[in-house]
Amino acid sequence: FGVENCLIEVNPGKILIPPKFKELGERILGLEVRPDDVWLASYPRTGSTWAQEIVWCLTNNLDYEGAKLLSQMRAPLLELTALFGNDQREWKNMLTNSVDQVENMSSPRCIKTHLPWDLLPTQINTVKPKIIYVARNPKDCSVSYYHYCRLIHDFHGTFEDFCELFLEGKTPVGNMWEHVREFWKRRDESNILFLKYEDMKKNQFDSVKIISEFLGKDYSDEELRELVDHASFSKMRQNPAINLEPILNQMYNSEEQKPDVKFIRKGQVGDWRNYMSNELADKFDEQSRKRWSDVGLNFDN
Ligand code: A3P
Image (tube, rainbow, N blue to C red; front, top):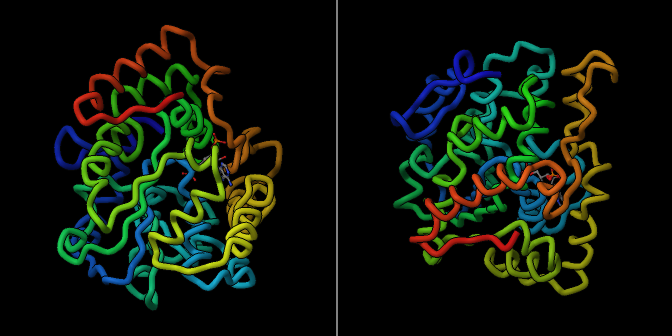
Protein backbone atom coordinates (compact mmCIF):
# COMPACT_ATOMS: atom_id res chain seq x y z
CA PHE A 1 0.00 0.00 0.00
CA GLY A 2 1.36 3.40 -0.82
CA VAL A 3 0.66 6.25 -3.12
CA GLU A 4 3.93 5.73 -4.99
CA ASN A 5 3.49 2.09 -5.92
CA CYS A 6 -0.16 1.29 -5.92
CA LEU A 7 -2.12 4.27 -7.09
CA ILE A 8 -2.43 6.18 -10.34
CA GLU A 9 -4.18 9.48 -10.93
CA VAL A 10 -7.15 9.61 -13.24
CA ASN A 11 -8.87 12.89 -14.05
CA PRO A 12 -5.64 14.63 -13.00
CA GLY A 13 -5.72 15.84 -9.47
CA LYS A 14 -9.05 14.21 -8.75
CA ILE A 15 -8.79 10.56 -7.86
CA LEU A 16 -6.16 7.98 -7.01
CA ILE A 17 -6.86 4.39 -7.84
CA PRO A 18 -4.79 1.21 -8.42
CA PRO A 19 -3.07 0.99 -11.85
CA LYS A 20 -5.21 -1.92 -13.00
CA PHE A 21 -8.03 0.60 -13.35
CA LYS A 22 -6.41 1.71 -16.62
CA GLU A 23 -7.62 -1.52 -18.17
CA LEU A 24 -11.11 -1.35 -16.74
CA GLY A 25 -11.88 2.37 -16.56
CA GLU A 26 -12.76 2.78 -20.24
CA ARG A 27 -14.96 -0.29 -20.18
CA ILE A 28 -16.75 1.00 -17.11
CA LEU A 29 -17.37 4.41 -18.68
CA GLY A 30 -18.87 2.68 -21.72
CA LEU A 31 -20.88 0.08 -19.80
CA GLU A 32 -24.49 -0.32 -20.87
CA VAL A 33 -26.78 0.87 -18.08
CA ARG A 34 -30.25 -0.67 -17.84
CA PRO A 35 -33.33 1.27 -16.66
CA ASP A 36 -34.20 -1.40 -14.09
CA ASP A 37 -30.69 -1.52 -12.59
CA VAL A 38 -30.33 -0.56 -8.94
CA TRP A 39 -26.97 1.09 -8.21
CA LEU A 40 -25.63 1.22 -4.69
CA ALA A 41 -22.91 3.86 -4.62
CA SER A 42 -20.72 5.08 -1.77
CA TYR A 43 -17.25 5.95 -0.63
CA PRO A 44 -15.73 2.83 1.03
CA ARG A 45 -16.59 2.10 4.67
CA THR A 46 -19.84 3.96 4.89
CA GLY A 47 -22.14 1.00 5.52
CA SER A 48 -22.48 0.09 1.85
CA THR A 49 -22.34 -3.67 2.48
CA TRP A 50 -25.23 -3.27 4.91
CA ALA A 51 -27.25 -1.24 2.40
CA GLN A 52 -26.24 -3.68 -0.37
CA GLU A 53 -27.71 -6.59 1.57
CA ILE A 54 -30.95 -4.70 2.21
CA VAL A 55 -31.23 -3.63 -1.42
CA TRP A 56 -30.48 -7.09 -2.79
CA CYS A 57 -33.09 -8.72 -0.57
CA LEU A 58 -35.70 -6.09 -1.41
CA THR A 59 -35.15 -6.54 -5.14
CA ASN A 60 -35.15 -10.33 -4.88
CA ASN A 61 -38.43 -11.06 -3.11
CA LEU A 62 -36.70 -11.41 0.28
CA ASP A 63 -35.02 -14.59 -0.95
CA TYR A 64 -33.00 -15.47 2.17
CA GLU A 65 -32.04 -18.81 0.67
CA GLY A 66 -30.56 -17.11 -2.39
CA ALA A 67 -28.87 -14.62 -0.05
CA LYS A 68 -26.58 -17.41 1.12
CA LEU A 69 -24.51 -16.89 -2.02
CA LEU A 70 -21.42 -14.65 -1.64
CA SER A 71 -22.60 -11.03 -1.86
CA GLN A 72 -20.06 -10.29 -4.63
CA MET A 73 -21.84 -12.94 -6.75
CA ARG A 74 -25.24 -11.33 -6.15
CA ALA A 75 -24.60 -7.57 -6.08
CA PRO A 76 -21.07 -7.22 -7.43
CA LEU A 77 -18.71 -4.36 -6.73
CA LEU A 78 -18.25 -3.17 -10.30
CA GLU A 79 -14.58 -2.17 -9.99
CA LEU A 80 -13.43 -5.00 -7.72
CA THR A 81 -11.04 -6.42 -10.30
CA ALA A 82 -9.30 -3.04 -10.56
CA LEU A 83 -8.98 -2.53 -6.83
CA PHE A 84 -7.28 -5.85 -6.34
CA GLY A 85 -5.62 -6.01 -9.72
CA ASN A 86 -2.07 -6.33 -8.39
CA ASP A 87 -2.92 -8.89 -5.80
CA GLN A 88 -1.79 -12.28 -7.04
CA ARG A 89 -3.04 -14.17 -4.03
CA GLU A 90 -5.09 -17.30 -4.44
CA TRP A 91 -8.45 -15.86 -3.40
CA LYS A 92 -8.74 -13.94 -6.64
CA ASN A 93 -9.54 -17.20 -8.36
CA MET A 94 -12.78 -17.32 -6.43
CA LEU A 95 -14.05 -14.30 -8.29
CA THR A 96 -14.40 -13.54 -11.99
CA ASN A 97 -13.66 -10.23 -13.69
CA SER A 98 -16.16 -7.90 -12.06
CA VAL A 99 -17.02 -5.93 -15.21
CA ASP A 100 -17.66 -9.13 -17.20
CA GLN A 101 -19.83 -10.28 -14.36
CA VAL A 102 -21.95 -7.12 -14.34
CA GLU A 103 -22.32 -7.22 -18.13
CA ASN A 104 -23.50 -10.82 -18.02
CA MET A 105 -25.97 -10.47 -15.16
CA SER A 106 -29.66 -10.92 -15.83
CA SER A 107 -32.01 -8.06 -14.98
CA PRO A 108 -32.81 -6.52 -12.62
CA ARG A 109 -29.19 -6.04 -11.60
CA CYS A 110 -27.97 -4.80 -8.22
CA ILE A 111 -24.61 -3.16 -8.77
CA LYS A 112 -22.38 -1.78 -6.07
CA THR A 113 -19.65 0.80 -6.71
CA HIS A 114 -17.23 3.00 -4.81
CA LEU A 115 -16.30 4.97 -7.92
CA PRO A 116 -16.80 8.73 -7.86
CA TRP A 117 -19.53 10.22 -10.04
CA ASP A 118 -17.20 11.16 -12.90
CA LEU A 119 -15.95 7.60 -13.36
CA LEU A 120 -19.37 5.96 -13.51
CA PRO A 121 -20.76 4.76 -16.86
CA THR A 122 -21.78 7.81 -18.88
CA GLN A 123 -25.21 6.25 -19.54
CA ILE A 124 -26.00 6.80 -15.86
CA ASN A 125 -26.82 10.39 -16.88
CA THR A 126 -29.27 9.44 -19.63
CA VAL A 127 -30.76 6.12 -18.55
CA LYS A 128 -31.14 7.33 -14.94
CA PRO A 129 -31.44 4.02 -13.08
CA LYS A 130 -32.26 4.09 -9.38
CA ILE A 131 -29.16 5.06 -7.38
CA ILE A 132 -28.89 4.70 -3.61
CA TYR A 133 -25.94 6.57 -2.12
CA VAL A 134 -24.72 5.97 1.44
CA ALA A 135 -22.57 8.52 3.25
CA ARG A 136 -21.01 8.51 6.71
CA ASN A 137 -19.35 11.09 8.93
CA PRO A 138 -15.74 11.47 7.72
CA LYS A 139 -14.10 10.76 11.07
CA ASP A 140 -15.75 7.38 11.58
CA CYS A 141 -15.28 6.64 7.89
CA SER A 142 -11.52 7.19 8.21
CA VAL A 143 -11.26 4.93 11.27
CA SER A 144 -13.13 2.20 9.48
CA TYR A 145 -11.14 2.66 6.25
CA TYR A 146 -7.87 2.50 8.19
CA HIS A 147 -8.77 -0.92 9.57
CA TYR A 148 -10.00 -2.08 6.18
CA CYS A 149 -6.73 -1.05 4.53
CA ARG A 150 -4.81 -2.99 7.17
CA LEU A 151 -6.94 -6.03 6.51
CA ILE A 152 -7.17 -5.92 2.73
CA HIS A 153 -4.46 -3.64 1.31
CA ASP A 154 -1.47 -4.53 3.53
CA PHE A 155 -1.37 -1.05 5.07
CA HIS A 156 1.24 -1.00 7.82
CA GLY A 157 1.33 2.67 8.79
CA THR A 158 -0.18 4.20 11.91
CA PHE A 159 -3.68 5.60 12.13
CA GLU A 160 -2.18 9.10 11.96
CA ASP A 161 -0.28 8.17 8.77
CA PHE A 162 -3.52 6.93 7.29
CA CYS A 163 -5.38 10.11 8.24
CA GLU A 164 -2.75 12.19 6.50
CA LEU A 165 -3.45 10.27 3.27
CA PHE A 166 -7.21 10.45 3.87
CA LEU A 167 -7.17 14.20 4.43
CA GLU A 168 -5.15 14.68 1.24
CA GLY A 169 -7.51 12.46 -0.76
CA LYS A 170 -4.76 9.91 -1.34
CA THR A 171 -6.63 6.79 -0.29
CA PRO A 172 -8.05 4.42 -2.94
CA VAL A 173 -10.94 6.03 -4.85
CA GLY A 174 -9.74 9.45 -3.81
CA ASN A 175 -11.07 12.31 -1.77
CA MET A 176 -14.05 11.37 0.38
CA TRP A 177 -15.44 14.90 0.69
CA GLU A 178 -15.53 15.36 -3.10
CA HIS A 179 -17.04 11.90 -3.57
CA VAL A 180 -19.94 12.64 -1.23
CA ARG A 181 -20.39 16.17 -2.54
CA GLU A 182 -21.05 15.03 -6.13
CA PHE A 183 -23.90 12.75 -5.07
CA TRP A 184 -25.27 15.14 -2.43
CA LYS A 185 -25.61 17.81 -5.14
CA ARG A 186 -27.89 15.44 -7.04
CA ARG A 187 -29.87 14.21 -4.05
CA ASP A 188 -33.15 15.80 -5.21
CA GLU A 189 -33.17 14.00 -8.54
CA SER A 190 -36.02 11.49 -8.53
CA ASN A 191 -33.79 8.49 -9.28
CA ILE A 192 -31.40 9.23 -6.39
CA LEU A 193 -31.80 8.35 -2.72
CA PHE A 194 -29.15 9.81 -0.41
CA LEU A 195 -28.78 8.06 2.95
CA LYS A 196 -26.59 8.66 5.98
CA TYR A 197 -25.14 5.75 7.97
CA GLU A 198 -25.97 7.56 11.20
CA ASP A 199 -29.68 7.75 10.27
CA MET A 200 -29.69 4.08 9.32
CA LYS A 201 -28.22 3.23 12.71
CA LYS A 202 -30.67 5.46 14.58
CA ASN A 203 -33.73 4.06 12.89
CA GLN A 204 -33.17 0.83 11.06
CA PHE A 205 -36.80 0.01 10.37
CA ASP A 206 -37.59 3.44 8.92
CA SER A 207 -34.48 3.30 6.77
CA VAL A 208 -35.40 -0.08 5.33
CA LYS A 209 -38.92 1.20 4.68
CA ILE A 210 -37.58 4.29 2.92
CA ILE A 211 -35.37 2.12 0.71
CA SER A 212 -38.25 -0.27 0.01
CA GLU A 213 -40.57 2.56 -1.01
CA PHE A 214 -37.86 4.16 -3.15
CA LEU A 215 -37.53 0.84 -4.98
CA GLY A 216 -41.31 0.78 -5.50
CA LYS A 217 -41.81 -2.30 -3.31
CA ASP A 218 -44.80 -3.03 -1.16
CA TYR A 219 -43.63 -5.30 1.64
CA SER A 220 -45.53 -5.56 4.92
CA ASP A 221 -44.06 -4.12 8.11
CA GLU A 222 -43.54 -7.65 9.36
CA GLU A 223 -41.54 -8.57 6.27
CA LEU A 224 -39.47 -5.42 6.65
CA ARG A 225 -38.83 -6.19 10.32
CA GLU A 226 -37.58 -9.61 9.31
CA LEU A 227 -35.23 -7.96 6.83
CA VAL A 228 -33.95 -5.55 9.52
CA ASP A 229 -33.09 -8.61 11.58
CA HIS A 230 -31.45 -10.43 8.65
CA ALA A 231 -29.28 -7.34 8.01
CA SER A 232 -28.54 -6.60 11.67
CA PHE A 233 -24.94 -6.03 12.63
CA SER A 234 -24.67 -9.23 14.67
CA LYS A 235 -26.18 -11.42 11.95
CA MET A 236 -24.13 -9.85 9.17
CA ARG A 237 -20.95 -10.24 11.19
CA GLN A 238 -21.57 -14.00 11.40
CA ASN A 239 -22.78 -14.41 7.83
CA PRO A 240 -20.04 -15.93 5.60
CA ALA A 241 -21.84 -14.69 2.47
CA ILE A 242 -21.17 -11.15 3.66
CA ASN A 243 -18.33 -11.04 6.20
CA LEU A 244 -15.60 -11.88 3.64
CA GLU A 245 -14.28 -14.67 5.86
CA PRO A 246 -14.10 -17.18 2.97
CA ILE A 247 -11.98 -14.68 1.02
CA LEU A 248 -9.87 -13.63 4.00
CA ASN A 249 -9.15 -17.26 4.79
CA GLN A 250 -7.72 -17.57 1.29
CA MET A 251 -5.76 -14.32 1.58
CA TYR A 252 -4.06 -15.26 4.83
CA ASN A 253 -2.42 -18.62 5.37
CA SER A 254 -3.07 -18.65 9.09
CA GLU A 255 -5.07 -16.85 11.76
CA GLU A 256 -1.82 -15.41 13.18
CA GLN A 257 -1.08 -13.57 9.94
CA LYS A 258 -4.50 -11.92 9.84
CA PRO A 259 -4.70 -8.42 11.35
CA ASP A 260 -6.86 -8.46 14.49
CA VAL A 261 -9.81 -6.86 12.77
CA LYS A 262 -12.96 -8.02 10.99
CA PHE A 263 -14.49 -6.70 7.77
CA ILE A 264 -17.78 -6.21 9.63
CA ARG A 265 -15.94 -4.56 12.49
CA LYS A 266 -17.73 -2.51 15.15
CA GLY A 267 -20.75 -0.85 13.56
CA GLN A 268 -20.90 2.17 15.84
CA VAL A 269 -21.30 5.89 15.48
CA GLY A 270 -18.58 8.00 17.13
CA ASP A 271 -15.81 5.40 17.32
CA TRP A 272 -13.44 8.14 16.10
CA ARG A 273 -13.35 9.41 19.68
CA ASN A 274 -11.31 6.32 20.56
CA TYR A 275 -8.74 7.16 17.90
CA MET A 276 -8.40 10.87 17.24
CA SER A 277 -6.73 13.66 19.16
CA ASN A 278 -8.70 16.92 19.31
CA GLU A 279 -6.20 18.40 16.91
CA LEU A 280 -6.73 15.66 14.33
CA ALA A 281 -10.53 15.83 14.73
CA ASP A 282 -10.32 19.60 14.10
CA LYS A 283 -8.54 18.95 10.80
CA PHE A 284 -11.40 16.72 9.69
CA ASP A 285 -14.03 19.26 10.77
CA GLU A 286 -12.16 21.96 8.91
CA GLN A 287 -12.24 19.88 5.70
CA SER A 288 -15.97 19.31 6.14
CA ARG A 289 -16.59 23.03 6.56
CA LYS A 290 -14.41 23.89 3.60
CA ARG A 291 -15.88 21.36 1.19
CA TRP A 292 -19.50 21.02 2.28
CA SER A 293 -20.78 24.18 3.94
CA ASP A 294 -21.69 25.81 0.60
CA VAL A 295 -23.92 22.86 -0.31
CA GLY A 296 -25.42 22.55 3.18
CA LEU A 297 -24.14 19.10 4.07
CA ASN A 298 -23.12 18.23 7.60
CA PHE A 299 -23.07 15.31 10.01
CA ASP A 300 -23.99 15.55 13.69
CA ASN A 301 -21.14 13.32 14.80
P1 A3P B 1 -16.92 -0.06 11.23
O1 A3P B 1 -15.57 -0.36 10.66
O2 A3P B 1 -16.99 1.31 11.86
O3 A3P B 1 -17.43 -1.11 12.11
P2 A3P B 1 -18.70 -0.73 3.93
O4 A3P B 1 -19.59 -1.88 3.85
O5 A3P B 1 -19.14 0.45 3.11
O6 A3P B 1 -17.26 -1.11 3.69
O7 A3P B 1 -18.78 -0.15 5.43
C1 A3P B 1 -18.28 -0.91 6.48
C2 A3P B 1 -18.75 -0.34 7.80
O8 A3P B 1 -20.14 -0.63 7.97
C3 A3P B 1 -18.03 -0.99 8.98
O9 A3P B 1 -17.94 0.01 9.99
C4 A3P B 1 -18.99 -2.09 9.32
O10 A3P B 1 -18.83 -2.66 10.60
C5 A3P B 1 -20.31 -1.37 9.18
N1 A3P B 1 -21.45 -2.29 9.06
C6 A3P B 1 -21.54 -3.38 8.27
N2 A3P B 1 -22.73 -3.99 8.45
C7 A3P B 1 -23.40 -3.27 9.38
C8 A3P B 1 -24.69 -3.40 9.99
N3 A3P B 1 -25.51 -4.40 9.67
N4 A3P B 1 -25.03 -2.48 10.90
C9 A3P B 1 -24.21 -1.47 11.22
N5 A3P B 1 -22.99 -1.28 10.68
C10 A3P B 1 -22.58 -2.17 9.77
